[in-house]
Image (cartoon, rainbow, N blue to C red):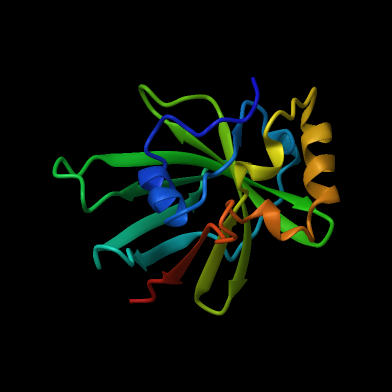
Length: 176
Protein backbone atom coordinates (compact mmCIF):
# COMPACT_ATOMS: atom_id res chain seq x y z
CA UNK A 1 0.00 0.00 0.00
CA UNK A 2 1.34 3.44 -0.79
CA UNK A 3 0.87 6.28 1.70
CA UNK A 4 -2.59 7.69 1.91
CA UNK A 5 -4.54 9.93 4.19
CA UNK A 6 -5.90 7.97 7.11
CA UNK A 7 -9.58 7.23 6.81
CA UNK A 8 -10.21 7.42 10.55
CA UNK A 9 -10.50 10.36 12.95
CA UNK A 10 -6.99 10.24 14.46
CA UNK A 11 -7.41 13.21 16.79
CA UNK A 12 -9.95 14.53 14.29
CA UNK A 13 -7.50 13.73 11.53
CA UNK A 14 -4.70 15.24 13.56
CA UNK A 15 -6.71 18.39 14.18
CA UNK A 16 -7.68 18.73 10.58
CA UNK A 17 -4.17 17.85 9.51
CA UNK A 18 -2.78 20.52 11.78
CA UNK A 19 -5.05 22.86 9.88
CA UNK A 20 -3.60 22.65 6.35
CA UNK A 21 -1.25 19.78 5.55
CA UNK A 22 -1.99 16.12 4.78
CA UNK A 23 -0.36 13.68 7.19
CA UNK A 24 1.40 10.73 5.64
CA UNK A 25 0.26 7.26 6.68
CA UNK A 26 1.61 3.88 5.73
CA UNK A 27 0.95 0.22 6.48
CA UNK A 28 4.39 -0.18 8.09
CA UNK A 29 5.75 1.57 11.20
CA UNK A 30 9.24 3.12 11.22
CA UNK A 31 10.57 0.14 13.18
CA UNK A 32 9.13 -2.94 14.83
CA UNK A 33 7.43 -2.06 18.15
CA UNK A 34 9.88 -4.38 19.92
CA UNK A 35 12.67 -1.96 18.94
CA UNK A 36 10.84 1.06 20.34
CA UNK A 37 12.60 3.18 22.94
CA UNK A 38 11.16 4.38 26.23
CA UNK A 39 10.78 8.09 26.87
CA UNK A 40 9.90 8.53 30.53
CA UNK A 41 8.78 12.14 29.94
CA UNK A 42 6.01 11.24 27.44
CA UNK A 43 3.38 9.76 29.80
CA UNK A 44 0.91 12.18 31.30
CA UNK A 45 -2.09 14.30 30.53
CA UNK A 46 -1.67 16.84 27.74
CA UNK A 47 -4.04 19.57 26.55
CA UNK A 48 -4.23 21.72 23.44
CA UNK A 49 -6.59 24.46 22.36
CA UNK A 50 -8.03 24.11 18.88
CA UNK A 51 -7.08 27.40 17.18
CA UNK A 52 -10.24 27.40 15.05
CA UNK A 53 -12.89 26.54 17.64
CA UNK A 54 -11.15 27.57 20.86
CA UNK A 55 -12.16 24.23 22.39
CA UNK A 56 -9.67 22.38 24.57
CA UNK A 57 -8.66 18.85 23.63
CA UNK A 58 -7.14 16.46 26.12
CA UNK A 59 -4.89 13.50 25.47
CA UNK A 60 -3.89 10.99 28.14
CA UNK A 61 -0.70 9.12 27.28
CA UNK A 62 0.43 6.13 29.38
CA UNK A 63 2.77 3.16 29.21
CA UNK A 64 1.07 0.09 27.81
CA UNK A 65 3.94 -2.37 27.68
CA UNK A 66 7.69 -2.42 27.98
CA UNK A 67 8.16 -0.42 24.75
CA UNK A 68 4.71 0.89 23.81
CA UNK A 69 2.26 3.52 24.92
CA UNK A 70 -1.47 3.91 24.64
CA UNK A 71 -3.18 7.27 24.37
CA UNK A 72 -6.80 8.25 24.47
CA UNK A 73 -8.47 11.46 23.46
CA UNK A 74 -11.93 12.85 23.15
CA UNK A 75 -12.90 15.27 20.42
CA UNK A 76 -14.91 18.07 22.08
CA UNK A 77 -16.61 18.89 18.77
CA UNK A 78 -18.06 15.36 18.58
CA UNK A 79 -21.48 15.42 20.25
CA UNK A 80 -21.18 11.72 21.13
CA UNK A 81 -17.95 12.45 23.04
CA UNK A 82 -16.51 9.25 21.61
CA UNK A 83 -13.18 8.26 23.08
CA UNK A 84 -10.49 7.41 20.53
CA UNK A 85 -7.59 5.12 21.43
CA UNK A 86 -4.11 5.08 19.90
CA UNK A 87 -1.14 2.76 20.03
CA UNK A 88 2.21 4.57 20.01
CA UNK A 89 5.87 3.80 20.25
CA UNK A 90 9.07 5.78 19.76
CA UNK A 91 11.57 5.23 16.95
CA UNK A 92 14.80 7.25 17.02
CA UNK A 93 16.22 8.41 13.68
CA UNK A 94 19.65 9.92 14.19
CA UNK A 95 19.13 12.57 16.91
CA UNK A 96 15.39 12.89 16.26
CA UNK A 97 12.57 10.93 17.87
CA UNK A 98 9.41 9.91 16.05
CA UNK A 99 6.12 8.60 17.36
CA UNK A 100 4.57 5.78 15.36
CA UNK A 101 0.81 6.35 15.80
CA UNK A 102 -1.91 3.81 15.05
CA UNK A 103 -5.58 4.25 15.89
CA UNK A 104 -7.16 1.31 17.72
CA UNK A 105 -10.71 0.03 17.80
CA UNK A 106 -13.48 -1.13 15.56
CA UNK A 107 -13.33 0.49 12.15
CA UNK A 108 -9.78 1.79 12.65
CA UNK A 109 -7.40 1.17 9.80
CA UNK A 110 -4.11 -0.61 10.29
CA UNK A 111 -1.95 2.19 8.91
CA UNK A 112 0.55 4.26 10.87
CA UNK A 113 1.10 8.02 11.02
CA UNK A 114 4.35 9.56 12.18
CA UNK A 115 5.19 12.60 14.26
CA UNK A 116 8.57 13.98 15.14
CA UNK A 117 8.38 15.20 18.71
CA UNK A 118 10.25 17.39 21.15
CA UNK A 119 9.48 17.97 24.80
CA UNK A 120 10.69 21.15 26.44
CA UNK A 121 9.55 21.66 30.00
CA UNK A 122 5.80 21.13 29.96
CA UNK A 123 5.41 21.57 26.19
CA UNK A 124 5.12 18.70 23.71
CA UNK A 125 5.58 19.73 20.09
CA UNK A 126 4.38 17.20 17.50
CA UNK A 127 5.41 17.76 13.88
CA UNK A 128 3.55 15.37 11.59
CA UNK A 129 5.23 13.83 8.57
CA UNK A 130 3.42 15.21 5.53
CA UNK A 131 2.54 13.15 2.46
CA UNK A 132 4.12 15.61 -0.03
CA UNK A 133 7.48 13.82 -0.36
CA UNK A 134 5.87 10.39 -0.63
CA UNK A 135 3.64 10.81 -3.69
CA UNK A 136 4.38 7.46 -5.31
CA UNK A 137 6.88 5.95 -2.89
CA UNK A 138 6.56 2.27 -2.03
CA UNK A 139 8.64 0.83 0.80
CA UNK A 140 9.47 -2.85 1.13
CA UNK A 141 10.33 -2.62 4.82
CA UNK A 142 10.36 -0.39 7.88
CA UNK A 143 14.11 0.02 7.31
CA UNK A 144 13.49 1.44 3.83
CA UNK A 145 10.83 3.83 5.13
CA UNK A 146 13.09 4.93 8.00
CA UNK A 147 16.02 5.44 5.58
CA UNK A 148 13.84 7.62 3.35
CA UNK A 149 12.86 9.79 6.31
CA UNK A 150 16.49 9.90 7.51
CA UNK A 151 17.55 11.20 4.09
CA UNK A 152 14.95 13.99 4.37
CA UNK A 153 15.31 14.95 8.06
CA UNK A 154 16.48 18.47 7.18
CA UNK A 155 14.03 18.92 4.31
CA UNK A 156 11.23 21.30 5.40
CA UNK A 157 8.89 19.45 3.01
CA UNK A 158 9.01 16.44 5.34
CA UNK A 159 6.60 18.29 7.64
CA UNK A 160 5.04 20.93 5.38
CA UNK A 161 2.18 20.85 2.95
CA UNK A 162 2.26 22.25 -0.58
CA UNK A 163 1.66 25.75 0.77
CA UNK A 164 4.68 25.45 3.08
CA UNK A 165 2.62 25.30 6.27
CA UNK A 166 3.98 22.82 8.78
CA UNK A 167 1.61 20.27 10.29
CA UNK A 168 2.37 20.79 13.98
CA UNK A 169 0.52 20.58 17.27
CA UNK A 170 1.67 22.13 20.53
CA UNK A 171 0.41 20.40 23.68
CA UNK A 172 0.80 21.58 27.29
CA UNK A 173 1.23 19.13 30.17
CA UNK A 174 -1.58 19.24 32.71
CA UNK A 175 0.18 19.56 36.04
CA UNK A 176 -2.69 19.77 38.56
